[in-house]
Length: 91
Image 1 (tube, rainbow, N blue to C red):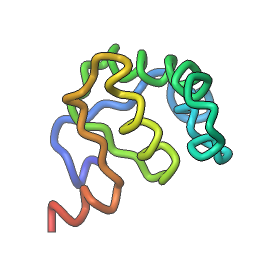
Image 2 (spheres, helix red, strand yellow; image 1 turned 135 degrees about the horizontal axis):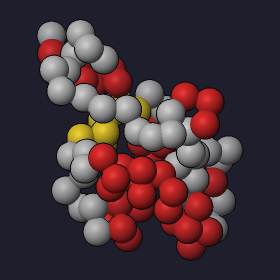
Image 3 (cartoon, helix red, strand yellow; image 1 turned 180 degrees about the horizontal axis):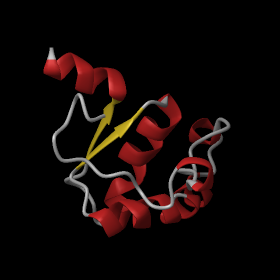
Image 4 (cartoon, rainbow, N blue to C red; image 1 turned 180 degrees about the vertical axis):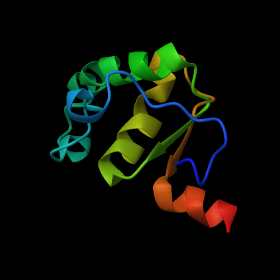
Protein backbone atom coordinates (compact mmCIF):
# COMPACT_ATOMS: atom_id res chain seq x y z
CA UNK A 1 0.00 0.00 0.00
CA UNK A 2 2.88 2.36 0.66
CA UNK A 3 3.59 2.44 -3.07
CA UNK A 4 -0.01 3.47 -3.84
CA UNK A 5 -1.02 5.87 -1.07
CA UNK A 6 0.90 8.32 1.07
CA UNK A 7 -1.40 8.34 4.07
CA UNK A 8 -3.09 5.01 4.75
CA UNK A 9 -3.99 3.08 7.86
CA UNK A 10 -4.81 -0.54 8.45
CA UNK A 11 -7.95 -1.42 10.36
CA UNK A 12 -7.55 -2.71 13.90
CA UNK A 13 -7.45 -5.54 14.65
CA UNK A 14 -5.59 -6.58 11.53
CA UNK A 15 -4.21 -9.62 9.77
CA UNK A 16 -5.30 -12.93 11.36
CA UNK A 17 -7.50 -11.17 13.92
CA UNK A 18 -9.39 -9.08 11.34
CA UNK A 19 -13.20 -9.09 11.39
CA UNK A 20 -15.25 -10.46 8.48
CA UNK A 21 -17.43 -8.01 6.55
CA UNK A 22 -20.36 -10.41 6.82
CA UNK A 23 -20.65 -10.92 3.08
CA UNK A 24 -18.48 -13.98 2.63
CA UNK A 25 -19.50 -17.52 1.91
CA UNK A 26 -22.19 -16.49 -0.54
CA UNK A 27 -24.33 -14.56 1.95
CA UNK A 28 -24.78 -11.73 -0.55
CA UNK A 29 -27.18 -13.90 -2.52
CA UNK A 30 -28.89 -15.94 0.20
CA UNK A 31 -31.73 -13.51 0.86
CA UNK A 32 -30.85 -13.15 4.54
CA UNK A 33 -30.25 -9.43 4.21
CA UNK A 34 -31.03 -8.41 7.78
CA UNK A 35 -28.63 -11.00 9.14
CA UNK A 36 -25.93 -9.97 6.65
CA UNK A 37 -26.32 -6.33 7.64
CA UNK A 38 -26.09 -7.29 11.32
CA UNK A 39 -22.98 -9.45 10.82
CA UNK A 40 -21.22 -6.53 9.10
CA UNK A 41 -21.48 -4.30 12.18
CA UNK A 42 -17.99 -5.05 13.55
CA UNK A 43 -16.33 -4.30 10.20
CA UNK A 44 -18.27 -1.06 9.88
CA UNK A 45 -17.23 -0.06 13.40
CA UNK A 46 -13.59 -0.76 12.51
CA UNK A 47 -13.92 1.55 9.52
CA UNK A 48 -15.60 4.27 11.60
CA UNK A 49 -12.91 3.99 14.28
CA UNK A 50 -10.14 4.97 11.84
CA UNK A 51 -12.26 7.60 10.08
CA UNK A 52 -11.67 6.12 6.63
CA UNK A 53 -13.14 7.88 3.61
CA UNK A 54 -11.79 5.28 1.17
CA UNK A 55 -11.62 1.56 1.77
CA UNK A 56 -9.54 -0.69 -0.47
CA UNK A 57 -10.54 -4.36 -0.61
CA UNK A 58 -9.22 -7.29 -2.65
CA UNK A 59 -12.36 -9.39 -2.33
CA UNK A 60 -15.52 -9.31 -4.47
CA UNK A 61 -17.69 -10.32 -1.50
CA UNK A 62 -16.28 -7.53 0.69
CA UNK A 63 -16.76 -4.99 -2.10
CA UNK A 64 -20.41 -5.95 -2.60
CA UNK A 65 -21.20 -6.28 1.08
CA UNK A 66 -19.64 -3.01 2.18
CA UNK A 67 -21.25 -1.05 -0.65
CA UNK A 68 -24.56 -2.68 0.21
CA UNK A 69 -24.54 -2.03 3.97
CA UNK A 70 -22.76 1.32 4.29
CA UNK A 71 -26.05 3.25 4.16
CA UNK A 72 -27.35 1.23 7.12
CA UNK A 73 -24.46 2.53 9.23
CA UNK A 74 -24.62 6.18 8.17
CA UNK A 75 -21.54 5.88 5.97
CA UNK A 76 -23.01 6.71 2.56
CA UNK A 77 -19.91 8.73 1.62
CA UNK A 78 -17.52 5.80 2.16
CA UNK A 79 -15.85 4.93 -1.13
CA UNK A 80 -15.12 1.22 -1.52
CA UNK A 81 -12.62 0.24 -4.20
CA UNK A 82 -11.05 -2.97 -5.36
CA UNK A 83 -7.27 -3.09 -5.00
CA UNK A 84 -6.98 -3.31 -8.80
CA UNK A 85 -9.02 -0.09 -9.14
CA UNK A 86 -6.60 1.75 -6.89
CA UNK A 87 -3.63 0.52 -8.94
CA UNK A 88 -5.41 1.45 -12.20
CA UNK A 89 -6.14 4.95 -10.87
CA UNK A 90 -2.48 5.47 -10.08
CA UNK A 91 -1.25 4.32 -13.50
